[in-house]
Amino acid sequence: MSGLADADPLRPPGGLPEGRPVRGIGEHLRAWRQRRRLSQLDFALEADISQRHLSFMESGRSRPSRDMVLHLAERLDVPLRERNNLLLAAGYAPVYLERALEDPALGPARRAIDLVLTGHEPFPAVAVDRHWTLVAANKAVAPLLAGVVDEDLLKPPVNVLRLGLHPGGLAPHTVNLPEWREHLLDRLRHQISVTGDATLAGLLAELAAYPVPSGKRAAARDYGGIVVPFELQTEAGLLSFFSTVTVFGTPVDITLSELALESFFPANAQTAEILRKMAA
Image 1 (spheres, helix red, strand yellow):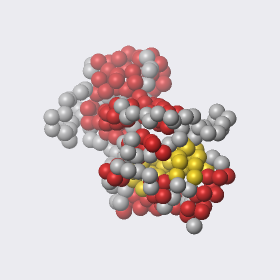
Image 2 (spheres, one colour):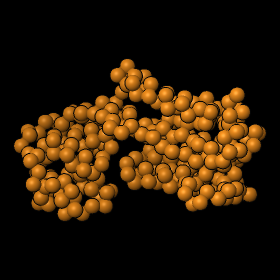
Image 3 (cartoon, one colour):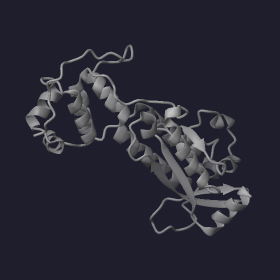
Image 4 (spheres, one colour):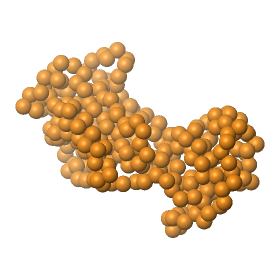
């Protein structure tokens, strides 16, 4: 049994947005448990509490303490933003701050982001938030956007998925658009299943409705089934990339927890040479 107690007094929620439907902590816990495809018994064992105790919390017969809420959220891998919502639903104040990336407190993190992006040149790299909004990019990205005809796609806030799949964006220049498109949509579907984010669900519906230009084919080269390449036709030639994603390992700030750095690497020597010439 866990040593986390249930004896904390109930405090008034406070801070809930006006007009927002009020859901009890039990409903939230049950929804996250079901999203993780865990039975009550499995989750109780994972959280080191009794199934009866969990059942009482989910049904509203028992009110969890602040520490218990955080404990259960940790075991369910709930995003920090949603952990604050769980605390509010249980009647406690949020504990995780959300600061702008320009906040002096996040200075070391911002310098680390810039170091990664700049250090990756002459190859492209971007930093995006939880909704795939562009936060930062290195100098190698701009030349790749020369073929974008819809200038609205380049006006802040720039959504990189919309930019990549929109008919007025990079889609017409993506040689292997069908497989690259499906790869991006699969990533987005997975993100939605993990976070339950309604904004991402709306973005998925929008992107899935975009037409796929005819004549597009699979990747020009076989990469052994280990990566899905991004193949972009440019005036300088055909560029082939694979990408890696970097996240902060132990964030306790919401902004940092939702930030991802995607670095694109040349998938062949030709691409590397073209990018070096473009940078020079």
